[in-house]
Length: 324
Image (cartoon, rainbow, N blue to C red; front, top):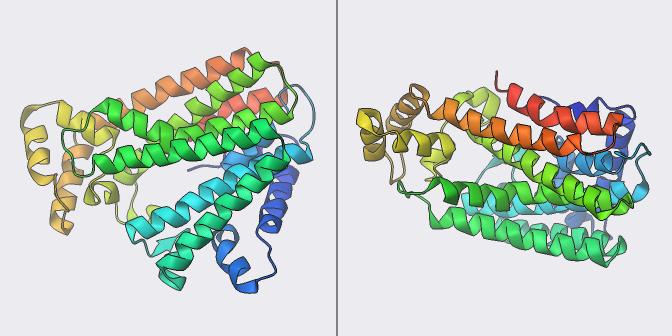
């Protein structure tokens, strides 16, 4: 995915470095081993979109990024990283961001405990920002779990509904983006209406983010993804383009349904990819993502004019355009 216009904002590079420094500092402990395991994916890099949304959201009134907005963003990023540690254990993944996963390098027990540690640090930081932020982050972690459970319930389910898919990605992905934007509004001292608008923006952005990610899984190559294309189908996770292809009916849908419902070997994966790529599911999923882009821009239209608002408004469209 292309870098976001959030990073083009005046002060963006400096703010991103502040986030990076604070993120690394947040997992320093007196135990060198724990520090190494907990900081493994931080050191590996990342776009830091969630904390940048927090920092930029706090600036929509025309102010500068504050220490509280940086800390709020770090709390969100730690939740994201903790969830990745746990996801890699569940998926038995071996690489992430071009390095060994924590579970591959140190084992599942260490990965689970290190993920728990990251969630605990996120909660500690949130508590330092007040009871509202602390409660918000706790609810968000619950929503992440609900979204993942909804997805797990429909593994290898060719009858999965589109509503189930949208509910799942709203919980497992979009909710944390919504929280990142909301925290920016809270620590920015904004009124309730502006905080709600920022939350709506973050939710819409998160929906775009996940649909684009699901499209990339089906359209990008292995060199771009770091894993074979169609990995979600192999794992029994049927995303919006696949669901739209199945729902279209006809011979392609029947052939795809015959392949799915079980793990796929290499030949089956290539055939399933060919069916999805040659039908309308990809284009229709992109149209759905486009509606969320519009929703995010509409939210920004009611925010004060500022460089930060302009950056937020441009970010979801840039994300979708990165598919081209």
